[in-house]
Image: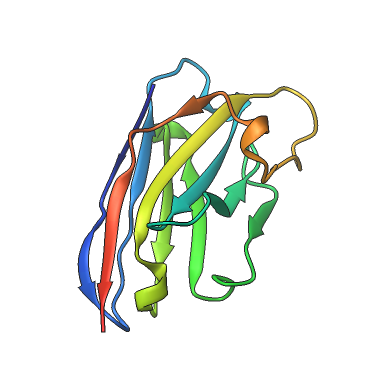
Length: 126
């Protein structure tokens, strides 16, 4: 149900904008998170957005540099990544779950997500 794309190889200081397209009926009922997993490390949430975009979350390591946004008309969530660093190198996954509660809910725990995309590799060279 989720298709992530837009990763790639970039030099430090560069930008990428992965996207996550969902094949669901009412995308505005789903919150979405972006997670990443670097080699030898646990998967972590880097950004999350509530179902209609009213609330967002960013990990401290990406604040100011990354921006999560969504276009519910296109069933797509984006992760604009600027000022990339070598330590941002990882496989990036998008995840979602249907939720019809608070419009501010944007969880960061993997356990709160039901659907996962296949991942897109982001490599930042120094």
